[in-house]
Amino acid sequence: MLWIWLTLLYGVIKGTREIIKKKSMEKNTILEVLFVYTLLSFLMVTPGAAQVGGVPWQDMVWIAVKSFVIFVAWIFSFKAIKKMPISLYGLLDLSRVIFSTLMGVIFLKEGMTLWQTVGLVLVCAGLLLYRYQTGGKRLFGKKNAMAEPVTKEPAEKVGFKIVCFALLSCLLNGVSGTMDKVLMQRMTSTQLQFWYMLFLVLFYLAYILITRTKIRLWSALKNYWIWILSLIFVIGDKALFIANQSADSKVTIMTLLKQAGCIVTILAGKFIFKEKNIGYKLFCAGVIITGIVLSVALK
Image (cartoon, rainbow, N blue to C red; front, side, top):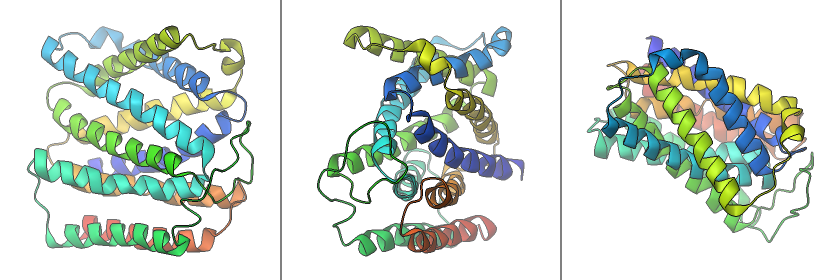
């Protein structure tokens, strides 16, 4: 089915985005990347502005709520990505499977088949296996180096606060994913993408003005990683919104499919950022991917 392939495409793009986010923050601050990345993404969807009218004000309120949820989630995720190995972030990001699945079952009344339940158990097992391997020492170590820019060989030790940032981002992204499914039954992908991106730009602009944060706009615009990040973000979100529009798509299955991106981040940790323990992380990811395949192929 088309929605399955579109969701898989989103998952691969999502994993690629995490890598590019880390690269983009080697030259610019978190807020500089966030604001310019969001602004460029919005400008890329403005050619469809003529088709975005007709959204009821009640739905506009919910789009604004979704945008605020993502606004907060991105701040948490960017801080986590900046301070921890990208391969570790890719594994922690898989915890959103649990949040999104629970939301799909509770709020959207989606049923879980036996194989989907087995798949969810395997996904959780993969996360627990990695947690067991760290023994609670590497993952929740003492403060790691906070100096900028991001180093190419980050330490495995990550502060508890940074891990919480990653998990909070996963929770909020799960909320957003559930809202996508509901909103896409009431509007087109073009309408949702335009208004959602506009609200995001306004939220980050308001945050910059209220906190009086200095933004090196020209420096960020010269950072080609931010341009690449914006382009693939627009493509990925478009694919995801179209997938959500399908009557056959289910948040519980889509959430599992999105996790294919963890392989991308783990491999990037090995070959781009020269991180350690990649073999074991790939094993854990393999358990997780097995769960995903079982959930989809035998649904």
